[in-house]
Length: 395
Image 1 (cartoon, rainbow, N blue to C red):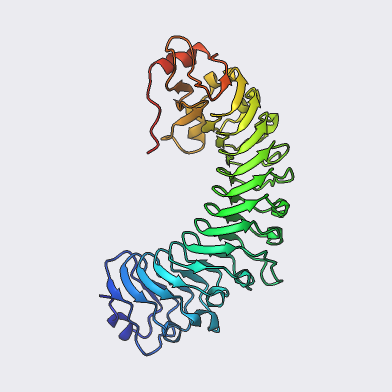
Image 2 (cartoon, one colour):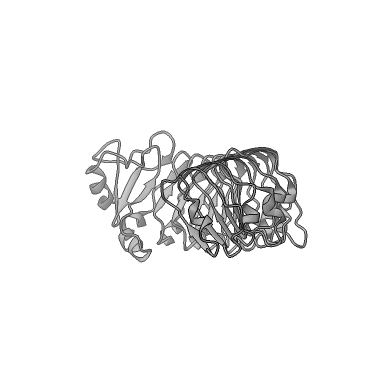
């Protein structure tokens, strides 16, 4: 049972941390106020029932409310939005909550309601808050369109937005560029369609963008090349056209995943400008031509997947001299392998050597029928290829 006696007998308590225990049953609060309490963490227990309606009167000065990973049901207390000083941090993720209204949380700085049973349409007013900076609504059942939102003067502080893994549909909001402080956007695993809005190009501080697993179409705006971007995930959409100069100046880019689209044209030589690139996934598009030798400039590259395209010509010979273990050591990771995917086969390599499955162990690299890459490899690579015939298992 929840140890309510702790609160009954300690009216001067300032912080209560009961996380990661095995408390069960409802959360029972005393009838008298505990005005000094500013931190409450009961995360990762088996507490059930609704959040008590009197929580705001019992704890009128709460700054942090952490109740994640329990079995809480019902709605979020409306009093949170009416407090003279509402909690700055609210984490009710991984529960069974079913109702949330913008006025209940929009005056808080950090709100995490991920992985509940929240549904219905989302109101644009939830973005117009004086303090709102971090909003996580992923893993719920929200539906409908994300209406085009325009921040007020008090609503420009949104830093991180995650509404992934819901049932949103319609086009992406076209005015996201007005949130100039945005650093992370995750709208993946929804049903968004239409083009990528050019307003994305205005997000100069953006570091993380995930729009994967939607129905987005059209080309990637050539203006989208923020220098601050580190991770881009656009896979499993219907994007088309060539990349032109998208990502051209994104020298901080670590992950570029544009697999499973309809992108075409050559892989541009400017790929060598992405000096921080570690993961490059171009699988299942219509890229054609040779693999550019500028790939050899990517000394931090650990995963390259160009399978299921229309590429031709030889593999860059520099792959045989790629000192990958040295690169991984510099990056602080010595326990990872590096993988090259050139066809339906998966080829792993570590410490500068390739290993994988081939058609003819004595002569060629297996490129299947998904690529026109010529089976030309340095002998140092072939020797290692022959020694292994099982692709790496990611499961």
